[in-house]
Image: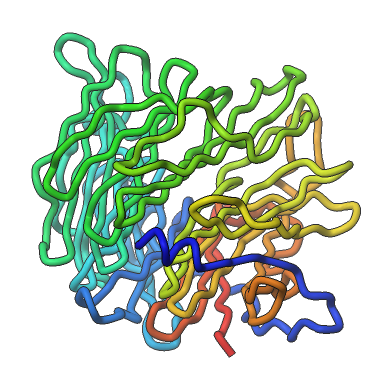
Length: 462
């Protein structure tokens, strides 16, 4: 992403008034038919080739044998349902079996229609935790290329590139006790991950991890360690640049990186007090200079006092790059007045553009996921739940989504959010946009009877 081009792109968000917004065309929620518990869904659309949009994706989830004819009581597996030209899910089938798998599940897509999944394998523990297991294969079939990564199942992160590249970052511990980050790369012309780039990062535990890719295949790794957020740039020639300290990291920090192809990057992260402790939540956003060198002092994007029981939930911050304009968009959750709201703003090389707010009076809305499409479009997935003494009440949580439409002062606006799932035991939403049809697919975890299940909905572009 050229710096001049980035500075010229102004992506701003607003919410259209109900009278001016088009009616949303999301399908009614559909439930994947399985005979075993289904949890932690992820929606993935891989490329067919670096210049060919796939249009064939998948919903992946953790579960048992999805077929009612499957053996009961088997160890937990990774299951999938492919998404074809209509972006409706096919019959579920097992993608990884023969292992006792646990979450978290992280996923990515590569070229040639390949899906990438990383899960925890309870049968091969590492340092008292399930070991990280990598699986890769074509959508619609088993992920047969299985690799034990040699470290624990968390923290783990993945990133997709813009022409089919993929990155995986995991952690390990050296024989001397040093903390290691292992970066595995699969470039758009390859069909497997190469040997890892090893980053040695001191002795304090690494508690959060994220990675971003640019067009060339350079990588920007962010991690939290010892109460601070760190960053490190790795070039596509495997050159490792010095690590940098970006700023403070408090309770359960969330991290979001974006890397440009001109040696510049953005980093975004949260800094919160522990639950039950009064204090101020802070969200930081930094833009680097040349050679991905970040300023010494972090830039405060938002700050707000949090109720003692409420903390930012997973997916509360996001950084994405729009296609094909290559503009960068930031979105985040914050407490504004009496309610949590979502704000979003375009970024240039020198400033954060005026933020727009997604809000519903008297309701807490939190960002849960964000995805971009092939036509400078974006879908925001939101969660809404009443507060409880222990946080947000996940048994009464609604899932909502809003898609961008032309308009607004910066050229981008959003539909009024549409409720995809009414208040109930809904959680862990995931979203992706089919790069061929430009339809959005949102999947989330719910309950059918007393059994965990996966539901999904599709939003047509028109």
